[in-house]
Length: 178
Image 1 (cartoon, rainbow, N blue to C red):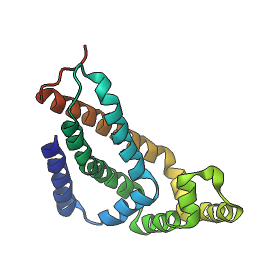
Image 2: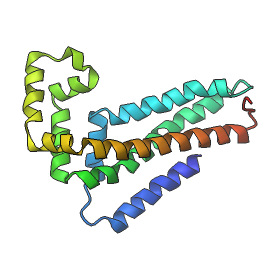
Image 3: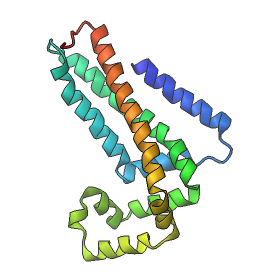
Image 4: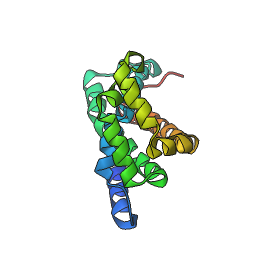
C-alpha cells in the first residue's frame, strides 16, 4: 500500500510538472487545505478507518501493524490533497486561492473552521465582510460543482484506502470476518 501511495504522489508531481501551463502553486493549495480544515477532515477520515478496521477481522491485529498504518497516514492524506489540486485549479485562480488562504488565516477564519457557534461579533462582521467579496461570491457560485467534484474524489479515495488497507492486512495473514 505504501508503494501505491508513493507511486500516486510521484505520478501527480510528474503530471503537474509536465502538463501544467498555468497551475496554481501546489504549496499554496496545500497551505489552504491546512487552514480551511480540509486536511484535518481527511486526517479524521483516516483515523476513523483505523478505528473501524478491527471489527472487520477475526483476529486481533498486532500493535506493530497498527503503528505501520498510522505512519502511512501522512502520505495517504497528502495523496488525497494532491488529488484535490486540479479541482481547485479548475474553479479558481491563484489570486483567488491566495485571498481564500488569507481569510482562513485570520482569527475569524480559524474560528469559523474550529467552531462557528463561538464566533465573536467582530469575527461575524469579518466573515460578513469577506462574504461580500468577489472571491466569496465565486465560492458561492461554484459551490455545487466544486462539492460534486470533491465528493467524487473523496469517495474514490476512501474506497481505495479501505480496499488497499484490507488487502494489506489480509496479505499479512489476518482473516476478515465473513
